[in-house]
Image 1 (cartoon, one colour):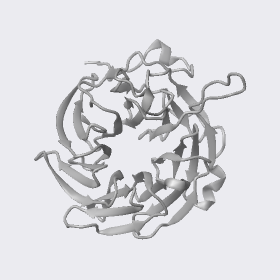
Image 2: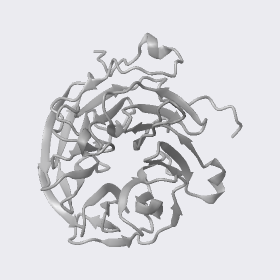
Image 3: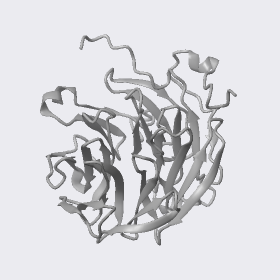
Image 4: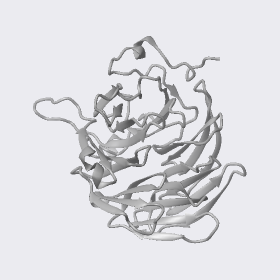
Amino acid sequence: MSGLFGSATSAASATSNALGDLKSDVALSDPPTDTITALSFSPGQSQQDFLAISSWDNKVRIYEINQNGQSQGRHAFEHSQPVFDCDFSKDGTKIASASADKNVKVCDLASQQDIVIGTHDQPVRSCRFFDSSGTPMVVTGSWDKTVKYWDLRQQGAAATLQCQERVYTADVRDNLCVVGTADRYINIVNLKDPTKIYKTLQSPLKWQTRVVSCFTDAAGFAIGSIEGRCAIQYVEDKDSTSNFSFKCHRDPVVNNSVSVHAVNAISFHPVHGTFSTAGSDGTFHFWDKDAKHRLKGYPNVGGSITATTFNKSGTIFAYAVGYDWSKGYQHNTQNYPIKVMLHPVNNDECRPRPSTKKR
C-alpha cells in the first residue's frame, strides 16, 4: 500500500523550487498538553518507528508511527517537574529522560518500568545514550555546571566532568560529545576518554547558544544561537578552513530594522548528512553544509518550533510546535498551538547538491 509516507512525491516537489510545502504533513494523535522540549525517534532495524517526546507537562510519551503517518500512544512515564530532554538507547529498548526535578530516568520499554538512574544538584538539561566498550551508558548535562556519566548497572555517577557554566545543550554521535554552556563555552569530549575535555572553544556566534548538533560522521557539529545564526564547526584544527556561520530565521528588513529569531533545533539527516534548522519564527529549512546552500525553506507553521528530529531512514521529519517563551509570559496564550507534525521527506528535499569542487 502506498500511504502518505510511502510515496512522498508530488508535482510541486519534483521542481527545483527552493520553497517547500506543508500540505502532506500529518499531526500526531494525542500530543502532549504543554510545550515540547525534545523528540527522539527509535534507532535500529525494527520496521516500526517509535517516537519519544518530552514536555513541560512532566511526561515522556512514546508513540508508534506507521508508514501512512497514523500514530498512537504506546506508553508514558512521569517526572515530578518538566522534562527537558529524552533519548532512545542505541538498541531501541530504553529511553532516558532529563528533568527539572534534577533526576535522570531510564524507562525499559519491554517491562514499561522506569527508574531513577542518577541525580544532579540542579535541573538536568540534556541526556544522551552512548556505548562504552559495548556497555550502554547515559551522559547528562545540568545547570549544576557538570556533565555526569551513568552506568545502568551501578549506583551513582561513573564519572563527573566539571564545566565552566550551566549546561544548556549537548549532543552525542559515536565517540563525539559536544556540550554547550552559558557564556558561550563549547566543550568537546572524546567518549573514549570521557573524564577529560578534549577541547574547549567559545562559540563563534556572539549570542547565547541554544542548540548543538553533531554531524552524522562525527567530524564536527552545528551550533544555533538566539540571534538567528548557525555555525558549522569541525573538531580538528586541520579542518578549520571549513568552519563558517550563516544567518537564518530572520524576517525581511523593514524600515532598516530586522527581526531575528532564536534557532531552537538543528537535526542532521541520517542518510544524506544535510541538516535542518528550526526556530522561534515558526519556520524550518533544510541546508547542505558542504555546498553552503539552502536546499528548501518552508512556510510558517503557525507557532514557534521547539524541537525536531528525523527518523532512522530519513523519510520522516518530525517537528514540535509550541510556545518557546521567546516573547515573554504575556504571549503564552491559551490558544497557542501545541502539536507535533510529521513531514514526509521526499528524495529531493534533503539530498545534497552535486559538488563542483574536487575532493
